[in-house]
Image 1 (spheres, rainbow, N blue to C red):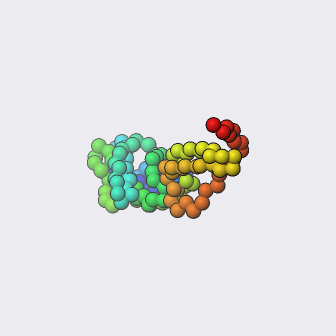
Image 2 (tube, rainbow, N blue to C red):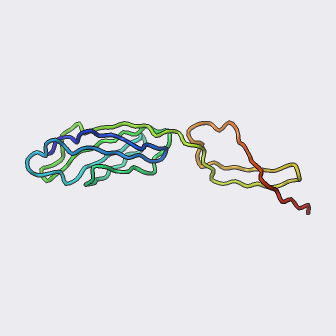
Image 3 (cartoon, rainbow, N blue to C red):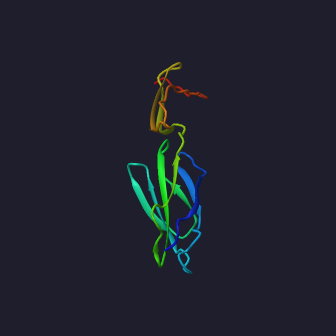
Length: 141
């Protein structure tokens, strides 16, 4: 079987995605090159496993402010590479709050009612909101 992939690294780590790359193993365990790499990614809640023939992969739909552990194992016709596998840890950063929905209602010429529902708080408590009013069309019914 092949040896462990080399130089596993993360790059372009954002709140919701990261790119993971590695170099092929130094020894293929004979003349048979790896056909694929087995990838496991876990955040201590969920583990996702998949295979790829590429030496780079884009991980998407990650959670912000979360530690991820990624393992990479080379595999060819002679079998899986040895344990322990190549491992990399990274933490996705906080994000800005993301608004799922909002509604604004003019109650009078000087009073607005604003309702905001957040999809995510971005990893930090939201301590204030700033509402910028650019124009208001108010009709008294």
